[in-house]
Length: 189
Image (cartoon, rainbow, N blue to C red; front, side):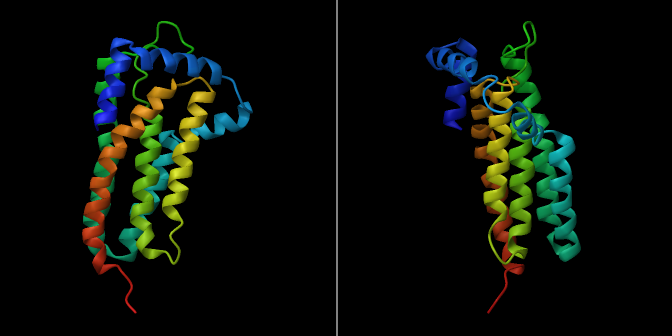
């Protein structure tokens, strides 16, 4: 959370980190294959990420209805994304990378959506899997989203990093509460 506060401060006051961010962003915009970068950026769209989270919630409830608190916590985490991101976007009012006059780009809502949707989905389904592949996949999907957003020029790099820091501080609370409930789901023997 401290890192998020420092990044936010630098963006607001246009400090040295802000200047480096703008230079890095300008160097990265348009780099890489456009179609792949666009696909990666789209992973953070609610139309893509929310069905993944909803499927995980449904799967867990079908497997064990007693896991409704974990499912409800995942839904609450998804609801927290716009509840936290939208006011911050309005407060910071950071200009868009490639759209002059447009503001409200910090922190990245697409990155936050990807991180929370894929992260909570992974945490929900992992106890039911034989191998622990869900969280690495969630990390890759979230990282790909951030990379795509920057390469396409939809966000500055610090917009993405800020979201990762903000929800990287919030997601462990879900993880900790999910672990406390997981003892009833853990296989024995």
